[in-house]
Image 1 (tube, rainbow, N blue to C red):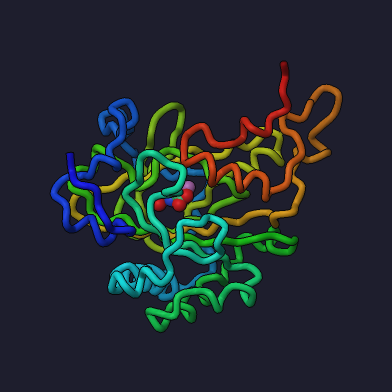
Image 2: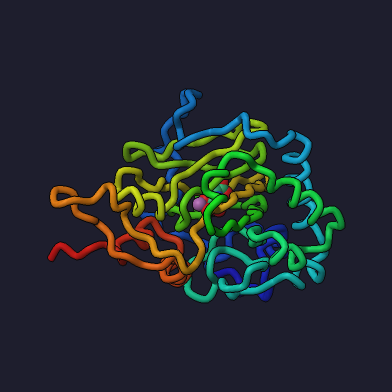
Length: 304
Ligand code: OGA
Ligand code: NI
């Protein structure tokens, strides 16, 4: 068995190993079985939405990816200044998903940022690389979810970094999961890895330059009383290339009470979910671990 590592971050471990350490290896029944992945025919309706006319200049998008790459290349001691395993911290660099609750780790490091209201959080963001804040503030100018941003809400961002992996068939960048928030707008670099589950099959979502992917999350499923389903997705790793992805998570504010929209509910259409606050949901999400089951079942109206 591979020796236990003393490294906190995968970035500092990955290049030193020739095989995947045991705590990253999935059970055989839960591996990225590539023979089961459907070949993409290149047609577009793979995800809920792909957005090209988003109004963010291509240079800003490219800068965000370049700076993310540069951040994960900073010396270990510099990166560790941002490290935390506490999911309640608004700015933190961490690894896998939640190292305090999970049994198997994911082949990923990530920097998590809160972005709204910007003035409350920007001072916490990394100051190295020096242009980090400048470029990420510019990258926030996204016209797409204006309807949501008018209300009280939250916006988080993650910079996901998956180093090359010596045995990509044994582990995941991220295992199958749904996002806990309302909607996610994802930017990926040019390295494939993202897959969504469609009609029982995993379908690759090939990167298209300068294009965002929009996924429905769990809160949208609740608000729509299951009319819209949050999409199950996962990220695979590969032997040769590192992969960067930058999702923005649009969320309700923590004290918002979430429930199926009143207009959708009457005697013939019963609510499938209880009322809860987003804070309650979010806490369960981080405690439960990233898994295909998600947390929605914990908030269903019991039919027993
Ligand atoms: C996520 C996620 C997908 C990707 O961070 O929640 O699903 O392509 N990322 O990295
Ligand atoms: Ni996700």
